[in-house]
Structures are given as structure tokens and as C-alpha cells.
Length: 278
Image 1 (cartoon, rainbow, N blue to C red):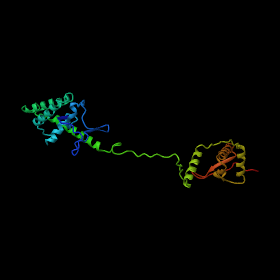
Image 2 (cartoon, rainbow, N blue to C red):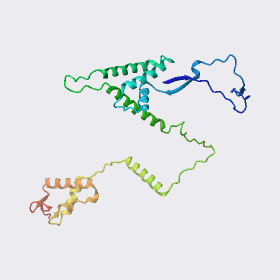
Image 3 (tube, rainbow, N blue to C red):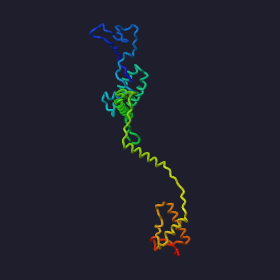
Image 4 (cartoon, helix red, strand yellow):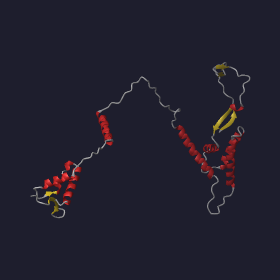
């Protein structure tokens, strides 16, 4: 909100050494005399004293100007100065004076309550200071106003700095990055890793005869008194051969062609023929 003061004439350009100098320039052309039909609005010759953003801004200005303690405001002096400014505003812009008049009513109410005798509340506690709410609003406004000033002083794009821009020509040749041996190794390892994820496992059917393996076991036991159980298996031939060999041993034991013995618990297991060939 701008406060209007006394009216003062507009100072036009004038050369103190040359009285014939132009009074002003209009569209670049010198103007040596004022036009006869020149109209100057009344508000155009006003001198703006101070600019305020609202009633709280005006109150804070008056308190800081008179060095009042904001926690102990002398309401009589503050109200008198505030009403003087409000009267000045009302003479020039009644619409803008409405919110200032509302604050003036609040100041008069606080002043009137402070003139009344202080009485204790029914609970025995002390009565709140009538200025407490006003002080709280002033402190909050001062804090927010200080933060706004700090934000305004921060660098802003378009006011304090401009982003750097550079135009790149289309004739520039693109430079590809160099590839070293380590990059090739990494790429190769990645290919191998993906290949293991998509590899196929083919299962083929292997025909193994139990009767044939039964004959192999019998031939391995001939001429020998005892043969250790594990010696009859050959892990190098694969899991399928091991399974069929075990089945062959079980079939031979079922037909009582071989005996599977053990000297004691947890001792080695031996296999021998159940008959003696002629």
C-alpha cells in the first residue's frame, strides 16, 4: 500500500546554463513549450512517502521507527500515529483504507481494554495481556517478511544469471569411444553367461539289459571267494549303468545265485557265489 503525501510539481528537464533548452523530449523530438491542452491527473503530482503492504506492515514500521519494544507496545502513542496515517490514506483512496480502518478499530479496542482496571480470572490465574494477540501477529509477520527478503536476495535466473547456451554445428564429426581388451573380455563373458541360460539338455534313451549285467556279475565272482560290494560298480560308466548293476545284484540275490554277507555291523559288505561250479 502506498501512502500519499503533499503534492509537488513534476521536475522537467532544464539546463541551468541555457534558458532556451528543451523542456522535455517527446518521441525523440525536443519540446520547448508545454501544450495548451495538456492534462495532468491530480494523482500524477503526488510524492509517495513510504510503501506498505498492509496494516501489519504499517504497524511494524511505526514500532521500529519509534524504537518501541514490540513485547511492551505503548498503545496510546502507536494508535495516535497509526490513525494519522489512516486519515492521510482516506483522503486519497477510500477503498484501500478499509483494511487499515479495521486494524484501527482493533487498536482502539486494545487501548480501551488496557484502560480498564485489571481483575483476576475466576480460576485465580492472571488475565492475558490484551496486546498478546497483536504481538503474536506482528512477530509472525516480521519473521515471514525477513524470510521473503532472504528469498529475494537469492540468485534468480533471468535476474542475476542466465543459463549458458551454445549452438553446435552440424558439421562436427562424432567421435566414438575407444574399445580396449578389457571391454572385449567383459562383452565375451556376458555372451557366455547368456548362452548358459538358453542351453538345451537332450535326454536320450539308453537300452541296458539286466540279464546281461547279471552275467557280468557272475563272471566277475567266478574263481574268487569274496568280492567287495563296491568293486562291482564302475562310476565311470555313468549313473544308468550303476542302477542296472544294482538291480542285477538284487535279482541274483533273489534267485539265490549269490550271497551278500557282512562280518559285523558297519563292516565292509562282500558278495560271493552261492554255489561252486563243477
